[in-house]
Image (tube, rainbow, N blue to C red):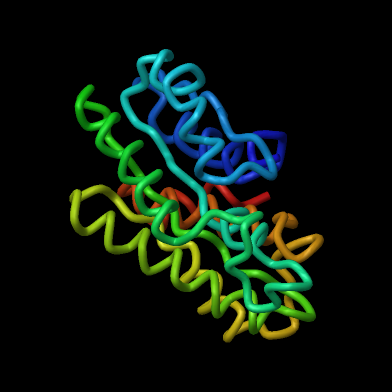
Length: 198
């Protein structure tokens, strides 16, 4: 979804191509909606590393946490999800595999849940966010802290929704996600703002 027109991956590509035309930037979106980090790791070699990229964005966590909520586990942690420990191992394995090949990594923290049950969902999700931050620090990779950016935005705009269905981004959410990644890549704010003007 992020790679379709208007999605955050599409927006990132538009900004980079506009402001860095000589870089010959080409983005492959290997994301599959609904997958968790275990599923991502299972196809990491085939769908990502085999393309020999120079930079990889890793975005995972919300499905890992979300799938662990069921009637027997109202606070998360059910067997349908991916534990925080497994999530940490999955992400670290991908980071190390990329680093072994000299590939730069940008790690995204998951975005927060919105809606009726967001308080208990996000209480669980924050453990995955913390794990992602720790991994970025440990391995000195760029961090696009989506969780913090979204929480800050929601505090300033409490009536504005950022998702269509509690987890998938609407237009505003996609724009914010793209902005956070572009800033992590070192793109100046003025260039991001210029590209977003109609």
